[in-house]
Image 1 (tube, helix red, strand yellow):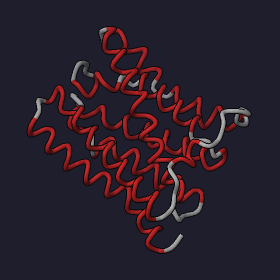
Image 2 (cartoon, one colour):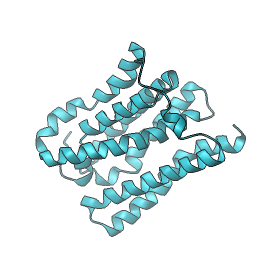
Image 3 (tube, one colour):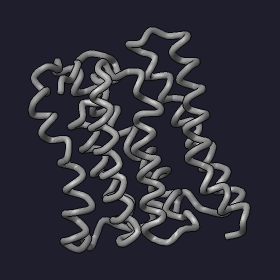
Image 4 (cartoon, one colour):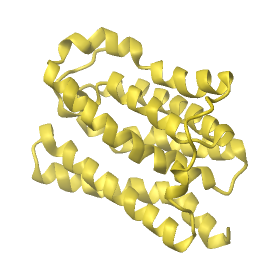
Length: 217
């Protein structure tokens, strides 16, 4: 890729975060806190789609290429356990501790949210950024650091207690490292998407952002 394409890839997550932040300010000014996150996520997904559109049309990184690989054969055991199973189970303890605080109907919302959110985030934070013009570990560190930071920069407004953001950022950086490490070795984004869906379900994402539950640490 040429210099412009490389610059675009490097700056794309920063541009995404800044544009989405503007969308968040707009959403929070117009809508109550309990539902403003829905419109904020709409901005987030829209800007991801726009960045992918530019990548597809201008620097010839195909969106469809992300899904051309099949699930079989299964990934190597080490890749599967460390890159897919481990990050999926990181929030399990929090889920077990707090799941009884959430009405059943919210688990339906969580499932819907997870099925939408995980593929969109993965095709950007892993699928697009795996093309960054760095070496393997440079790609992993750069993308996962910004991925973790995005959970503070974009979504901290909806956390009822500030302390929740610390384990959230740390855990999402770790997840980003493991998912990108898997993708750089296996090339199949479908597996990180599945792992990410499980993470979103266990994290009780919708109740957290809507203020339905408050975590205590």
